[in-house]
Image 1: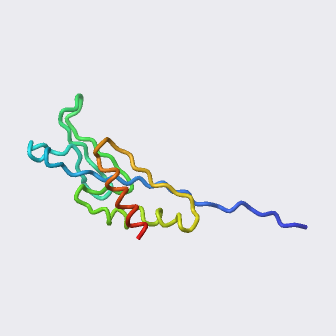
Image 2: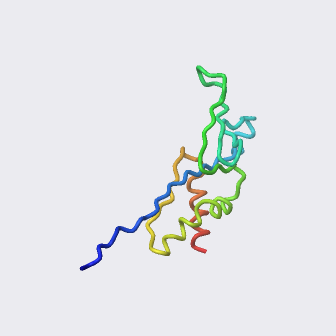
Image 3: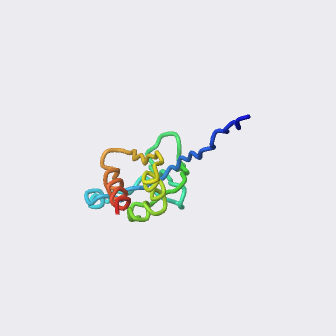
Length: 118
């Protein structure tokens, strides 16, 4: 009698990491303030006081939040290194960057790619 093979359990994991970009020189010169603020390692706060219908800021939680001054190396080590190096082991994985134009997606992903290749 032949043994029936059971399907191998596989682990799937989705992590949501957020990196806020710092104000650029033009925004600093105009004395603009950032609408988003990291209040801890997992939560960002929307502080735009122009929103209608609410006098209170909104908070959003994620797996990990990084301030604008955080180096890309830290994001790589903390959140994407394991994923990036899984490709070498033959594991299908993705790192997806999403955000507005000029929000730092290419800058962050270029750094992650560079660290992974080293």
